[in-house]
Length: 145
Image 1 (cartoon, one colour):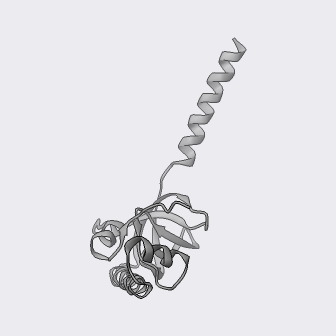
Image 2 (image 1 turned 30 degrees about the vertical axis):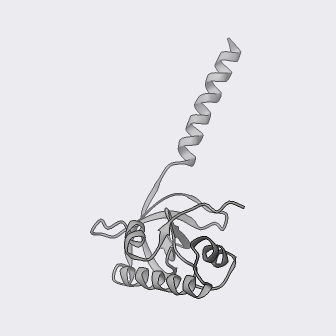
Image 3 (image 1 turned 120 degrees about the vertical axis):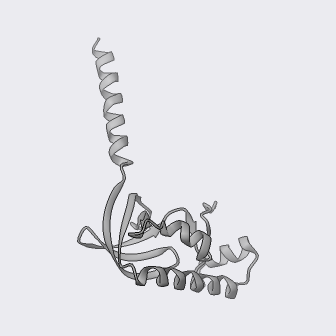
């Protein structure tokens, strides 16, 4: 009997922990800076944070390992990768310079401690999707090593 109680308790605790770890936070944020086409600096709950937009992969704005990978994967020169990256950054800047107060939905952080999230404007526009369709970004592809 004790074993059954321990098993049930363990399952309930695991389910609760899983819900806590995967719960979505929703909050209004203030945009401070556009770092690139898919990363912004913002005030989140009174603290300066870096936010990485989910589901999209914009080109890099400088020559680095990821830019080299993008160059090889998409068959572009490094110069074209950087040009596309700067285009994406400018598109996001144009979109958010008039909309400094936006809504953020997020549930976790990446290995760089950036918030991984979705940003929405007051009019309901989903910024991540806008950047995929209009900002020169690609659908996120997990790079295999």
